[in-house]
Length: 230
Image (cartoon, rainbow, N blue to C red; front, side, top):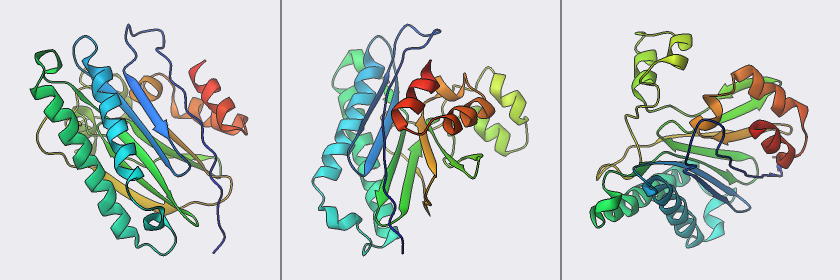
């Protein structure tokens, strides 16, 4: 089986319409994590940073051999469930012990590379992962929001969902309750695939067509990131 090499880059920007940037991300050579916090004052930023840091710490304590080609995909999926449960507990407990953090939470999306060519995806909330393959863009996560549920139930159309007043109202998030349920997925990547992790600060502003054009235009991950936020 042919091995695939992964190149990544991350950046964040406050944009034009928000007074606070509550996104936080981190990465290593095989794990990429993004969170978009919510809560009063600076609580959202605290929540997103706590979630991401707890995941990176948890994964760091696991031997790299758990993620090689000899590992079972279902076992890795269970590890992802475990790290997300741990992140949820970390944020939830923090919110209970500080009145200023009450009700804080965060979305979460992550991608984990299993050699030689498998990508594992997980998310909670409406931060997304996209796959660009053969010039076609596909969302590979599941939104957990009021409008996403309405869309899946056929109550509203995709175009209506983009402008619906409840489009940012989440049905699942990290840290807002004792328990959490994540969406997970895995698939084999091929050369020239491009995977984008982003918060609603990006996908709510750029159309799928605009995202596709930028992903196609640039070769290097840093240039892609810069193109997406400028």
